[in-house]
Image (tube, rainbow, N blue to C red; front, side, top):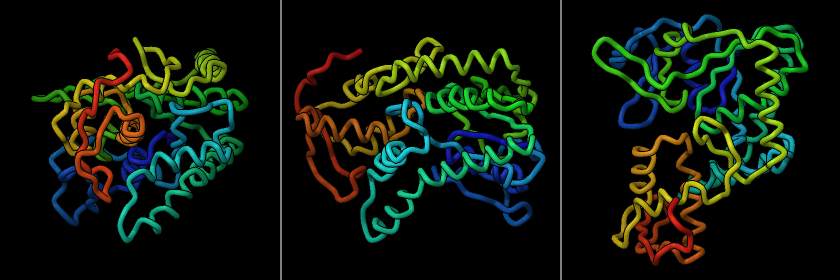
Length: 303
């Protein structure tokens, strides 16, 4: 079974889930334990997902952002991905990381070609999607492509929460699910019929025709929105008292689970610095470490 996901973190966890390794989180970053080598984290172990890591495809094209009338493997999309991922490069490894990040768009394009090869060989696919905008957009776009094939298609939609014996764990995207948990979501798997596939493909066609600069999930539906759609969160959290940019973005991500990455808020902060709405109180080579504050009342109204 070919597993399709729409983000690097979730794809890495799925590769681990199909490679018999255990993944946990320690102080934020993802850590990997080879089975039997170290004490695994205290997460409910649901078993492994059958298969190998080579059967995992990552289509991390970030289709909730930018022009979607251009092909996903176009130079435009590759440049957009690089511009978002490379915002906080600094220090001695900046040039090395820059070269690596420039390849991100090509990596996803190669993943797309791998998927096409699997489809042409008649392989069944399983799509792991969530309500995060990047995932919903990736799923809709993929459905339009899959209409050209007769392969068996399965989906696993991330539920709002998973209830354990003593706790309830909520999720906003598959990137929050560790490797040892993935198999526990297989009971949510369903077969995607052609009628449903056509419906989702039609939704994507509508979004492409609208081609707004940004797409968001509003009242359960993906809709095109302006670039400043999430800016109200900056105005809710930012004051005239200087705060570290990383802390501001972290507070937003922790309080509002819209499935938008830190790089988007960093980009909007840069924009409002240029517009004079946000002031740099203390600069830093590490952009996320600089102190920023509200310079004046923003020219846009809070939503």
